[in-house]
Length: 77
Image (cartoon, rainbow, N blue to C red):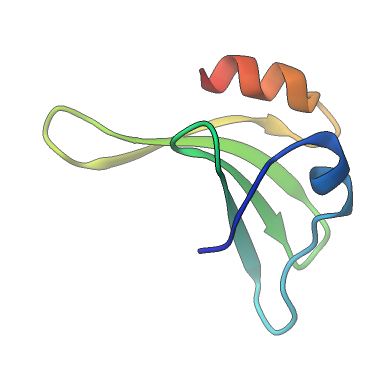
């Protein structure tokens, strides 16, 4: 579970770690805000949270090419 400050400089260079199908980077400032990098090269923003029943939920915010990091951070907040 790598953590990083998800800003444009990091996100534009982020890649999947070698030998893995996907790598999820957790933001250090917004709780639950993540960037999923896949081995195919795709990158997607998500927001993870726990519902009132304590089940883990995940909402897709958008893909790297569809949503800017500023828009993704605003939606995550």
